[in-house]
Image (cartoon, rainbow, N blue to C red; front, side, top):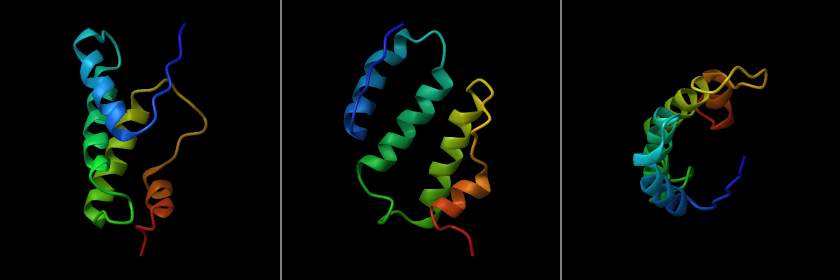
Length: 87
């Protein structure tokens, strides 16, 4: 097994776009991550609207749901609280 570390939203997006046609597994996660990278490339969490941050949370939850079961999962409420989206 090989591990590849890529830093930066643009670099991750470009790499995923290159690999996506060849992925046999994890396509749902790759597409969700592509969408998140596209959203995060042009802005930071500080400049995003609350709705954009909620969209990011939905993408995180989708990616998380496609992983094997883990005890360290964050809930939607946990992520909202982390991003300051709670009233």
